[in-house]
Length: 99
Image (cartoon, rainbow, N blue to C red):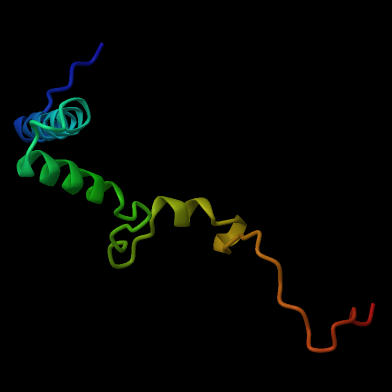
């Protein structure tokens, strides 16, 4: 079995994410369970975390110059042509062409 060392920065990011997530859950539970004792801080933390969840997750960074994304490579067919399931636009006549 190969052991891989996890960089310290990765562990710090994971620990930070867990801490922020725990803080958000604490604020939300406090607002739900004891609303009369919760204050501005709990409301701000809960609203801020909810607002972050509304960010569009489909937005990604542009691919590096000359490189393609994994989705772009997956859409390539034989000979490097792009394969798509989109239909072709209709001709102005609307009927079928000559056979």
